[in-house]
Image (cartoon, rainbow, N blue to C red; front, side, top):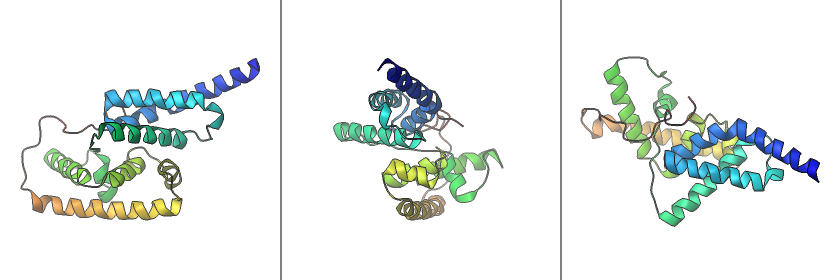
Length: 193
């Protein structure tokens, strides 16, 4: 029995060391840094209790647990959130970050954040899982508890909606001075680059 505990403890330690930064980044992107840290702790508490159930690779399973904990939190609090990322523009344009004029970069980032914020919660989550958290379609499908085929269709549609929102952004609003502070959390606040 003692040998099994050591084995489970080592398995948990390995999973924790490998996945903690990405689970924290995902939770932070959904609910902000402070609550994200709490959700991450709860995620690894569940992982500890269910160490025998953790599949390989563990990250999609852990992100699924995190997602469920966030959904429970939202049901309790009825708290709405916005997820924003600089990667939104990369999804549609393929332009690497840092290329071009600073003013264009700020305006483009603002437009991308506004377009992303205007999407449904499901579209934002799907796009950030792929673009920000770097999951493949198979892993993202595991997190969202759907088939890869379903996810692929949803991803295609979400990208089209984001493109339409980005195209509509300049026409809907005249250019304004950029905010002095980032209006939403960015991937640099706790997420791996």
